[in-house]
Length: 269
Image (cartoon, rainbow, N blue to C red):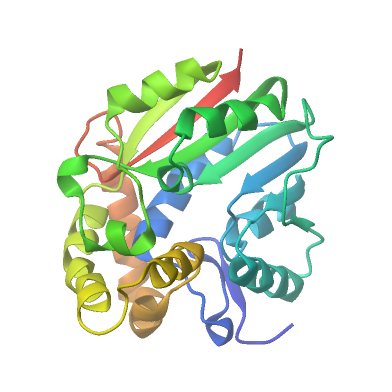
């Protein structure tokens, strides 16, 4: 294993030499996901849109029999390399398998649904891959009032409101068990700070064509260029202490709508 590839209980897996490190928003989301998964029995798990595969690596290390579905060639190649570095055996599929119906104990889709035009149809398909009483964990960006240049850059179709997301879940035959609004106040702040960077990428020289937007959409879950510069601070002692504080603060506000993202845990009806 490359010595640059590290894993810690607070930051999770990182591989700066591959261009992927955890971002603050990801870490706030990860903290809540780990909390929601703590009592789930290990079993067969599918992650849709795993990005670099960091969470799949952690799920696998916890004993889950992990697989992933990743349509982006660029993301799939990175995830395969990333997963090998952490010595996990996680098949990554380029297309859904026709034999997946009622096959998985857990299905995860983090920051994926907002990219899909027909979100209810997608959620219905994902739910069909769960075993009876299987669990789905999903995250999406929250509040259209927070729409910014990164949403446009990443190819998002929408940000969600609580009521609209609940409606999609019920329509897809899923019973919501936990509904959290995560990230406050850190992710609200980091989104605002990073928006001008993405705005410049879109409008100041090159990200203008449909092909460019499609390419950005495909790599939106793996592009960590801005975060590579700040990662040394993030993994410093002051940075880790700050993250711990923000994780505690966000936990106090998960039942409000103050954060910038939603995390839902649901079961197949």
